[in-house]
Length: 112
Length: 113
Image (cartoon, rainbow over all chains, first blue to last red; front, top):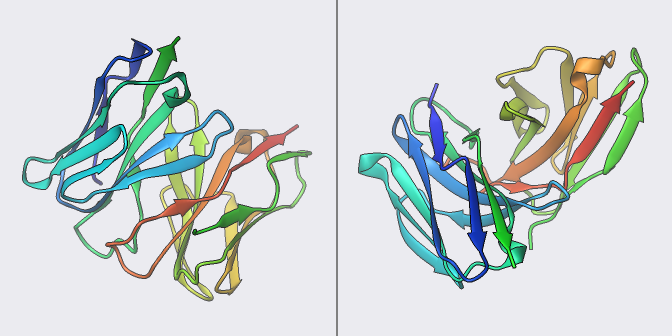
């Protein structure tokens, strides 16, 4: 099956700093999402971005499907940005029915 | 807004009990999914359903079954709970097809003692 690798595994920032999270995947995808898992465990949708670039406030994401990677940018980080960020992809091969394969996540800690 | 609601946030059950985890979505989504999340193993797909009464095994279906009698509801069943099923369970839904955004419930943290 498709492999998803996220980097870095851990990231510690001071409030106000910028950061870039990376997601590499091993095969063609028809679906790519970024999530933020809050301290209570819920996955919050950040971006649905199988290709191209999107921005939402301080967050933006870019997926280059032909090169099999996606980037999540966080600017002017805040303590509330802390948590785990997941990249999840749907393989373009076969009939996927919207199934997602998740990376291992990046644990972000933002200190005041 | 899409809402996916799981019946319990926290659950404690005894070994051997039959356990039902319920998930309801209010956006008329065709696809529904159950994942479990474990430290070091990430999120893994247990079962999914792409229509009422239709179900497909995911990557780790052993020890689980599912039921989808109505479009909005997808239940995960632990036939005989075991301690290795202690985990965070996450339900998700999405529109029909592959090119659709998935939305997750708040999660159920199950402890089997």
